[in-house]
Length: 205
Length: 205
DNA sequence: GAACATATGAACTGTTCAGTTCAGTGTGAA
DNA sequence: TTCACACTGAACTGAACAGTTCATATGTTC
Image (cartoon, helix red, strand yellow):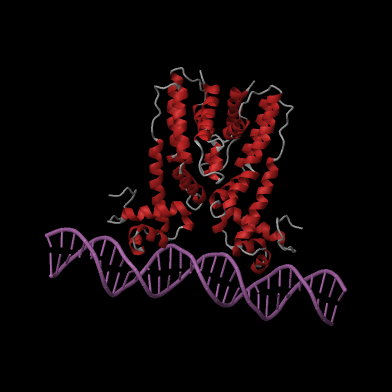
């Protein structure tokens, strides 16, 4: 019925509760969110909320679990091997920056950093469903392209990480620290083109 | 007497209070830290604490201000221009990763991400005292090296950001999300050498 | 329409915590 | 000795909030 891992009871308003919780947790963090507020946003009584989840922590964990799953799905897309590496990488970079600069990407990242010592495996789960998946996809593509003689790479893991990192130049820190809240197309393509050029300068065949 | 910006009253135990606050805030964050706990760690009565600072927020702001100043000082060091670019960059990279992977760097970063919407200019202040200063130093060096014909760079800002970003490959996310708490010398030099090689492949004359 | 499950809202408990108050202690200077 | 000042510790207030309880309502199924 629901997407939960273990047997959380189901019912008519289960999804409403989770939706409300997602909204409020993402906006206010764990401490900042009050259960009363979540119930109000979810259009549900507090008693109903507590009939589904034993406590606030469990509700939070379930929300983050769902969001990580969603994130993993976004990251799962394969990179098309038929294109020239420059073009394939440009598309990958576009997708990566798109996610990093999105409201959703920002919020999940923030929450995970902030709460990762109250919830010890939160960080790991985020890392595995996001960055690790991205790296695996990227690595698969790079390996493929190297086999076809389009690229020359000694350390595939490092190359993948470097490329992902290059895509964040300037942009990431500025958005994480609220210096800017959005970027122009020009800003973004400057970084993406720079990333591809630098990567190809090192690894181009 | 003290290092504060505006006229906070001074007294015998002023520094004790700030010291205790720094310890507790860095360990537990803003919400997580209780004023009673801070007073206990600082070996000071709560009344004394409140005679120096009007409220918890102001105390927190002052602690972060101090830490950012400290950070700025670490970032201010000039890069030696007499070396070959490979060597100068390797040294810069060493310093950068050293800071990023340090307990102090980690904690300040975490705190600033977590509290940057409760305290809107926190993020900006951290950014300016850290990453922005690093970029300025790096840019100065790159510009210099380009003038001497050692490097060929069109967009100095982007190049500086790319280098800083390359230094974080793999390491940064793993430490931010508690996948690892420390790295071997081999892990670090793998990333640093990779960063220098990739950078030089693109920008070497 | 009776039986059953689910949802409601409002009041209540207990706890945590920021910030206040105050009577009293220690100390150094005039 | 006395005055001024910084400090103390313990008790207190008031607010926020997690989690509970229960009498009542709504709706579905047979």
